[in-house]
Image (tube, rainbow, N blue to C red; front, side):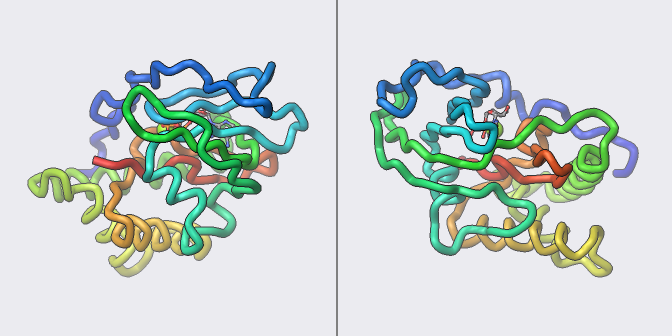
Length: 199
Ligand SMILES: Nc1ncnc2c1ncn2[C@@H]1O[C@H](COP(=O)(O)OP(=O)(O)O)[C@@H](O)[C@H]1O
Ligand SMILES: [Mg+2]
């Protein structure tokens, strides 16, 4: 259904923010909070290169740390897994990860245009598979990566394929309708910073 804009808010989920305070940990002492979502808190390490990401979603933890996680140009680098540092009110453990610092997509740059194209293609596939309910996003992503000719350049096509494989393997769901989950490096590379969630 070309021309129908994707929802800027993915099913209303983005308006919910993790209510927990930053867990006490020596590495996080005095570090400014620079981001927060439904499952994660991001604090600036202060070296301009890395952030501390406190993640409570098992989907995120797998995505950032599993040996067989998607890697390469369009996925965030995890430098150190500092282990479990507490428990969220949701019941999930808080894992502290040291990750590469990313930046919001600035308006009208190449990465933002690419993000829009990815979101629009994914959204139109979601509409096509909407009757599948909870399986919609998973099948939509699978469809995008399996339909020839592939829609993007090699590195983006491979990243979408890697994401689709991860979603299938780990029984998680894609979360790429919202631009908050797509970020960029200083050099302008688009990064899938938070592309999965658990149902
Ligand atoms: N690597 C990062 N570097 C800098 N800021 C980040 C990074 N990852 C996420 N953020 C910021 O933190 C917010 C929440 O992160 P996100 O991974 O989307 O968490 P959630 O799992 O809660 O959705 C993002 O919208 C973004 O603004
Ligand atoms: Mg997010």
